[in-house]
Length: 377
Ligand SMILES: [Zn+2]
Image 1 (cartoon, rainbow, N blue to C red):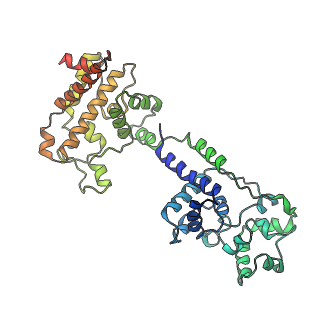
Image 2: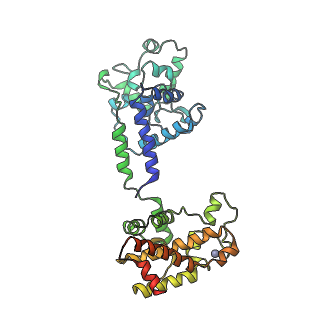
Image 3: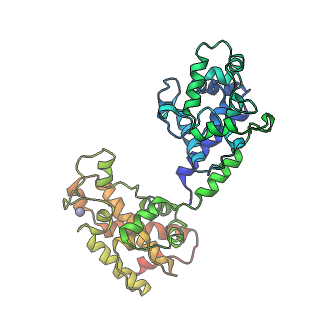
């Protein structure tokens, strides 16, 4: 199954890779100049571990596209476990900028002048033992009147134990490197981790029916169909994205979420299974399946949505085509109660059957359940 949400995120994350690897190309200058409003060095920005996006929204010059991109990127990194080892080397290799652990008043720091002068990690404001003295600091960050205030801000925002460790333990200065290319590895780790997360619709239906469901069977019987129109229909049905009055109200298209015929709230289960308009139709379908396939089933909402675990796939095709017809008649009536009442669902169903039987005959496909339905009539 394609997880569209994840695919969109992956596309956004790919942009980060493109940006960091093509910084000298013409097109990347636009991005660089926009992101410069947050941080003058894209590599530093992309290595930052902050997850709270509120701060970015305050930058009026950062366009929504780049906020979205950073959001996807930060979300991905939040999903990858950070090392919690707090040795002096680990602390010194921490970024100062965009670091959620160095955030006074919940705002991460980005001091452009410091970044421009190559001060990126905690190690850059340290000697072999402890922090830089004021004179050296002023030499490293020249022409900045409030550099001491900013230095104080950084130190105070840092966790106390980090400060203590840096002050009391020595560390050779040249061992810490700034790793520039973790992007592809991060992306693949993220996608691997996400692969095993259940789609939220699966949990939704399991909770609604109070059962655990063998989803791989459901997806196979509902989506792996020769008839792509019906496969699409099932996909939307299972993802609860087909319109009904309740959804239309959520989408702010209508104000009343009641069924136009029986005036109770119309969600998917009402539209497809519980409305008195469709009950006789489903009884006909039950009889059809009984006579044709010698199977006694009840077309409940659960059956309509999930299909039936059976080696005979024709049963699920009939159920799907019936549900498709119910929806089609609802859509044709377009909220006109009189019209909806007058449409004969069974007649519409038989029309759908005839169309499909003709196509299968045309294609010389012998196993033609639709032709069998017509012959029975
Ligand atoms: Zn109704």
